[in-house]
Image 1 (spheres, rainbow, N blue to C red):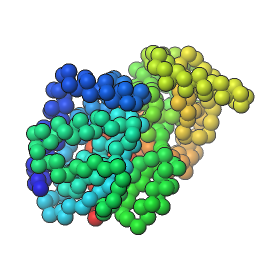
Image 2 (spheres, one colour):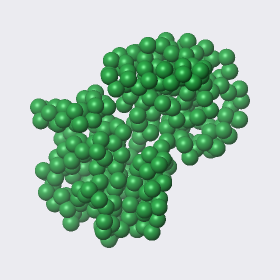
Image 3 (cartoon, rainbow, N blue to C red):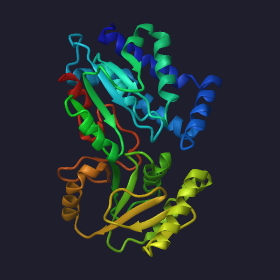
Image 4 (cartoon, rainbow, N blue to C red):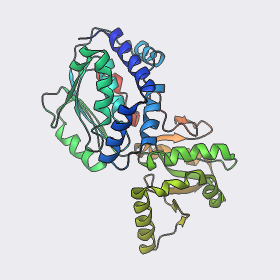
Amino acid sequence: MMTLVQRISSLTELGKVLIQNNNTLQTDIFKKACVENPWFTPENIYLSLEAITSHYLNEQSLSDLVLRYHIDNNIQPKKIGLVLAGNIPMVGFHDILCCYLTGHISMIKLSDKDKVLIPYVLNLLIVNYPEAQHYFEYVEKLSGFDAVIATGSNNTALHFEYYFRDFPHIIRYNRNAVAILKGNEDLSTMQLLAQDIFSYFGLGCRNVSKLFLPEGYPLERLMEAFDSYKDIILYNKYKNNYDYNVALYLLNKEAFLQNEFFILRPSTDVASRIATIHYEYYSNVSQLTEKIKTDMDKIQCVVAADPLPGISTVSFGQAQHPEIDTFADSVDTIQFLLSL
């Protein structure tokens, strides 16, 4: 097996290779991934790769994480079953990285929606560090594992909770991001918010699906501010969902506003349908803070310009750029793996 220093070096080298490897092979791999999952686009794959290379696969981030958790070479390797999601490109890579960095073996059950990209990236790692192949196994069905990290819809997560109840586990449910507007945001800030909403077609757990607006906020301002993403409607799957949801809201006689590429719908729900942004007005920041706290089991992150008491927030435009020590559902994956 590899030493911790070797594993860090291999991940750092992988980051460099991914940045430099803008060649025909990579383009062909991306095309294949897009064919297998029409929700994937080359632009979104590059967006995911940029986040991974800049925040995960650099020596400083990796070394800081090792120092923070006192990771060393004395860990007894365990087999960790990973049930990966496929809603956005390579969304399961962080779990694999955490297992590898802590010296455990990943038993990877790939999502049917993302069977191309993660093997491609791990193969690039193994080319330069052949001994790394011992840390990754691809499986169709999990067996012989010591612990599990599984991500799925709310329905499948309930199944996971039951099926893996006798093993140490992390089970992740559906979550989304919310954003808080004060009403004085300039156009550049609103365009950053648009990134948080529309990147990956809004399919990521860190995509903003709901806006909290100050009372009296003119909804027309949102329509104008998000105009830079109007070409999103040119993607057939997105447009089909947009058309379906407009028809659904009309049929149900629900209140909503629409322009040519997204829908604004008043709702107390955090999660929204594709091409739909929920909104809710607030008049008191303290009450809003308490409301968000009660809904935190549905919220992945909170986008806001100002800090909120007892709630971690991220800046506008940063929802899809988590740091290496930002863990899904606020469950510390590294600490879980070190406790096994």
